[in-house]
Picture (cartoon, rainbow, N blue to C red):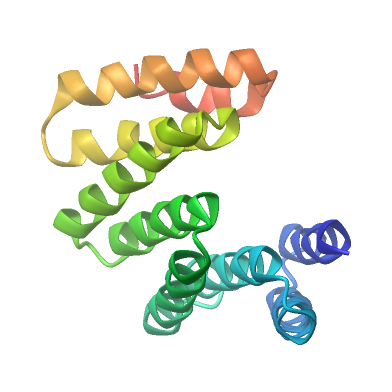
Length: 169
């Protein structure tokens, strides 16, 4: 069911129907809580937070949801959920021009992804750091993470994100 919820929510996002996506993700979180599926709950909270941050333009609500996702993941020992929450927190901090927390959360997410050896998370965390460091005038670190992200996305066959990080080189 998680794939159904995330797929449908993402489809609504791509069609710029944020309110419908919000309803799907809220239903996903409610269902996950009902059946005790904490991993699904974390994913739903992260998707909902990202939606609030990017489409609904409510970063305060996004941070509240991400704190909930982090708490659920931490309480249950879900390292992947913690990494995803930290990665999304980094993006939310970046949109709020909070560069200190943007970097802190990105590094935290990267460390967790490396510990898990999770290819998608590592690629996304490398990409996040590739965007964070140039904003801090750390050009060499930005380039290093952009190259790493490029290699990781190439290995995953994700040409769209390969092209995205190539713009940073």
